[in-house]
Amino acid sequence: MSEVLSQQEIDRLLTGINSGEIEEENISEVLESKEIIEYDFRRPTRVSKDQLKTIRNLHESFSELFGFYLASRLQTMTTIDLIAVDQLRYSEYVLSISNPCVVHIFNIEETGGKALIEMTPDLVFTTVERLLGGGGGHPTTTRGITTIEQRIMMPLIKQALKILTTAWHPIHELTFTLSGFESNSDFVQIAPASEIVIVLSFEIKLGEETFLMNLCYPSFALEDVISRINTQYLNTGHTDKPKDRSSHKLNQHLQKTQVEIRAELGKSQLTVKELLALEEGDVLFLDQEIDKEIPIYVQDRLKFYGRPGNIDGRIAVKLTSIAEEQSLIGESSNGK
Image (cartoon, rainbow, N blue to C red):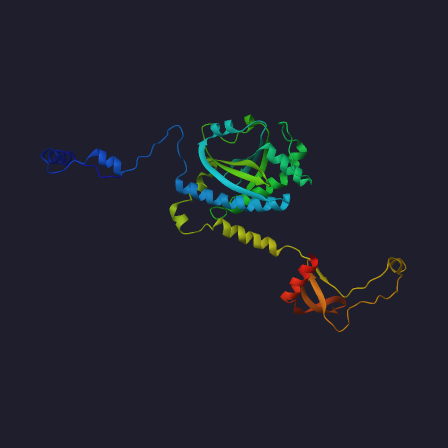
């Protein structure tokens, strides 16, 4: 708070200005040197620019991780980009939702508030079509999604909430749980009409098609969490870069990926007649000598050489050497 001047000090200042001892500043120069920011009382700002920047960074991480997940489930090129972060009244946001709509409401357990994920019906139709093995088409006429389509989408929405929990982890431990579904925007009531909400808009590209998805948080539902976001927190670097986090997550998934390893004891050629005449106890002659190393393939690519044997009564192969680069190139050429 600025110091309050006494009446005598005010009189001395006025006397000094009138006598010329104190030069009066040119108001126009002051206005030019200082930035004037307009304030709209009809749309008050609840979240500062620095806090919005952090929220944007968190949800850019969410968009990358959720994009990787959708790409693996839908088996198509998928990218998700965060295109806008806005503050507006909840009544204004609800008016922007078209009918029929696809709105999944979820609880924020730690704060007792609610938030929502809004998708366009065309995005849901395309996603369901791909999940069921189709090419990703959607109806030409406008209609709401059915109960079956809603059930098919539910695992994807729950996974999105898990990824959202991971994205918020650097700021606060939040738990998001799916609580409801609405297809009519008139019944989507998670906040008072005059409440300020944070709306994050995403652009989802599935193959050559583009769709929109929105996340809406009422400001009061995240009031305590947002208060933790400040400039000092940003400068200390507690939040990892989205690309670093997504790369780490991708590495974790790759390490858990199962691959097929196959050891080839040898080859033999038979006619169809000989094959049909095979009986139990018959012996097949292979082209591999018993004292030579056998090739070991990983996902049909030659990677190692080894020797067959057994350990504790179980068939095993001992790795003896790594396949040379020339062998790998040769195998790749032969495969083509």
